Length: 435
Image 1: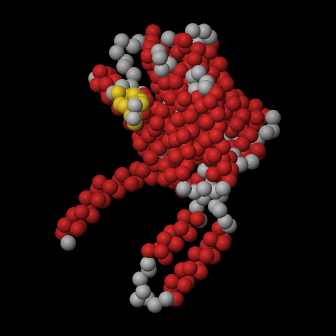
Image 2: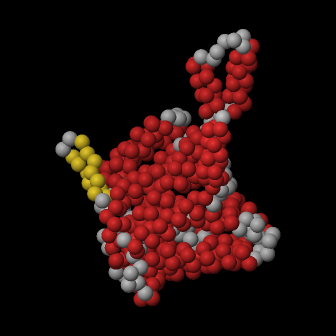
Image 3: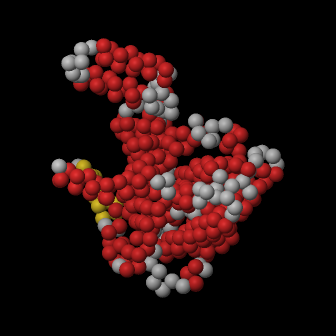
């Protein structure tokens, strides 16, 4: 008994605080921040070990064909495909049954996202109109939803819920824009035969959606074929994750009332039997199947994969890509065209683009300010949306994969721009009046 009580006490001390943290809305953002800080610290204390770990060469193959890749490439091309798979499901959910399922709901965040993508890219190109740095124009277009929601959660007594929904919807459109940019502008040497294979795989996914296939292994197998075809076809393979996410069904196969009625009748029959009889495996399996039928596959897959994405993939990605050695870096490094364009694109371009386009939409009568918030609060969340971390780092790696110096400058600009946007946005909202 004493041992049992001790175990329960240890469980309460160690596990319950962890459970409470994982239930916190801001948890993924906090973990992402810790990972970025750890990467910066590691890269500056021992850059040789940092790069040795993530540049470590791996090999995979069968027969006579062997593919070599680094740990960082495994994270950026492999794990990030799962990240974009979850993003694809989130986009579909919002478009079908969420905050973007009508034109009226989608108009304001779409308008805001347009400004929040166009102006940062334009500011970046002002400093990088030519040369290798021009390829990074897509970097400051991204909004990191995990960081944004994390900060807004800490300020929930100051920010109306409608504004949080607005930022979330805006980030969804940002994700759509980022995905299109990655697919259209950061590929390499298109190959028509492989692209036709990718079209075939995507068509098969669409057919599976229409036939209401619910088996995750089947989607995974076709998604892997799509990934391989896109990789060889010249389009970045992580786009396969988005297409896979969009193919998952969002509706139940049959009306919920019919499923509940069948479940009720089955459970009633079990209760009518003698209490001494034990349930066999088939009867238990039938109950489990009916319960699964109550939830559409998209929600089931999203609930399954979202924690893995939020608490493993994103932190690991941040750890592998945020390490910037600050040795010898001064104001001159911040003034380099790529770093300066990225910093100002995120900090100035995002806030001005989102705020100006939202204000224009409100003035034109397309939609009111979400939650009847003040203009100051709208400006504050426009600042917060300038935190462009995960997708910005991802696009930077695509743009400057063969130019390490420019990649380091881009990372520095992302970190400084995101820090400025988050810090100033937090202060603006913190000093605003409570609703």
